Amino acid sequence: MRAVVDKDTCIGCELCVSICPGVFSMDGEGKSDATTDIPAEMEDDTREAGEQCPVDAIHVTE
Ligand code: SF4
Image 1: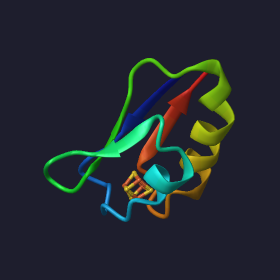
Image 2: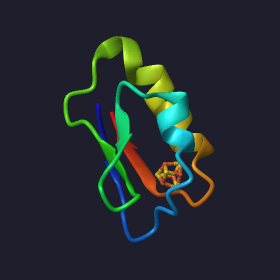
Image 3: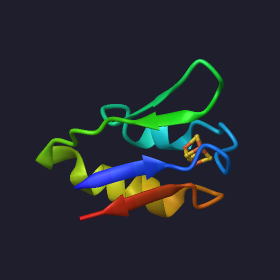
Image 4: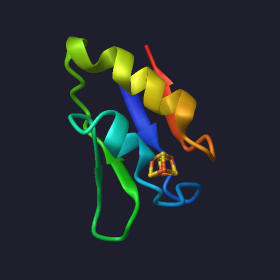
């Protein structure tokens, strides 16, 4: 699984970080970053973060 954050779209609400802090973190510019190596046990939370992002900035591919 891979998750990519579209930083031009991200509004820095930090919701993805609160849902899945093991994968998402805030960068120095107030935008979310996703780790490239997503552990299997975090895949459900990663999908959830992608669904909950208010501006659809997280793109998850299986
Ligand atoms: S939930 Fe979406 S808008 Fe909010 S920080 Fe994460 S990627 Fe950005």
